[in-house]
Every structure is written in structure tokens, then in C-alpha cells.
Image (cartoon, rainbow, N blue to C red; front, side, top):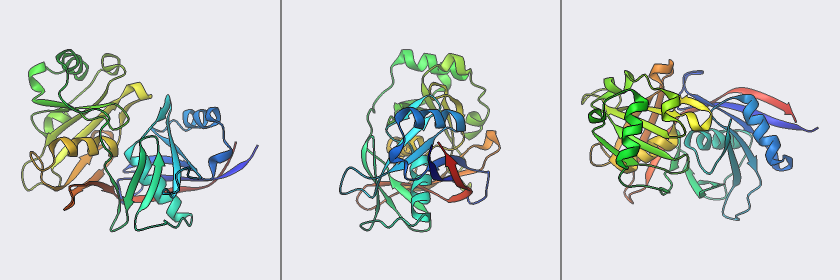
Length: 276
């Protein structure tokens, strides 16, 4: 058995216990796949991550991301939380950006008022099939006509995003996890102009072992790629986790080169060591 440095980081909040926690294990090169998967099941968080030496010389570190039911090629709040943990532990980026190596390749993060990652290219985009929309409507316990628009927004977890009438309609959802099954569904609705946040987002991911994720960077990235600059402005704040008594705030901005940056506050809530 070996001891590993450990942090649990709250992401998309500047107040403890109001964001989405991620468990981060440092120096995890000696752990097997099964040890990683077993620890992720034990933490029972939406994601648990493992920091390893990079394989790509352009990267600062390699990250593996596990849910209670399996491994993901990319996820947003684990990316921000793991970068926070790596920097807090003394990590020094090689260049202007922190560069993470993960299942979708290299992901850049910028440091400013808060950490932000560059949204990776979608693995799947485009229109959603009608039979999938019927299934989503049934799983959300709403009529099919209440889904005003939809788009595949998959950058790793398999997201399909649906737009409802407004933020109130999103907050009122009482989904049936069994009916949604293994679909990763993101619901989005707008707030009135002038509100603190532009949209309310909810993420239903029963297939990953979590019925609802509190605050979700990857989904917000996919929504920005779908709606940013059209339905949504080039810079805005997204609210998520309200129904779960969280106060997640996701800061989204598109730079002059067209890159979408998804950011949030991060803070360490637990620090210590674990033995595996």
C-alpha cells in the first residue's frame, strides 16, 4: 500500500459547499486502472481525478477522469479542479497556459481572475433524432412540444442539450432517471434580460452513476458552442445547481480568435493524504 497526496476541490463557487466537488489524487502513476475505478466508486462523487506524468511533451500533466461507473475522456469541473490542485501543490506550467493531457487530447487553461479551460472540439454535434427527443421528453416528464430546440453537444460525456421555454421551466423539471437511462441530458432556459445570470442549466447523467450533476463545465461548454453569439452573448454567466441547493456560477466568454473559454472559481475544501 502507498500514500498519495489528496485534495478535494469545490469548483464553480467562491464559497465552500456551494459548487461541485472533485476528488484529486496527486502523483497517481503507480495506481492501476482498477484502483482508480475503485476509489472513484468509493468517493461516490460525480468525478474523481488522477494526476500523472504527461506523455505528450507539450503537456504539463496528464489527467484521468473517473465517474462511479467508468472513465471519461474529458469533463469540465474536474479539469478546473485538477488544475487548481496541481497549481496549489507547486505545479509550474511550461508556457503561458496550463496544458492538460487527457482522453480528448490537449486542453489549455488560462489563469486570470479565475481558471478557465478552452472548450474542446465536439465529438458529436448537430440535430437530435426525433426518437431521442421523444425519449428525453418522457424522461423529463414534459410534453415533446416543450422542447423548443435541441442539439448534440458531446465533448466527452455524451451530452445532448435541450432548450426549454425559460429558466423557470428548467427549475421545475422533475425527471425520471430510469426513463432517461444512459442518456446524458442537459436542459437550458434563459433568464430575463438584466438578471444576474443569462441561463439556468441542469445536467442529468444517470448513465454515469449520478442522477443529476450539480455544476457541469463540459455541458456548459457544449451549450456555448451551440448558442453562444446567437441566442446568448459572447460573454455571460450561467447558473447551475439551484435545485440541489448549490450556487454554481459558470463564466463563459469567446475571445477575439473565436475560442470559447469556460471558467469558474475554485477552492480546496479538503487536503491530506490517502492510502491505497
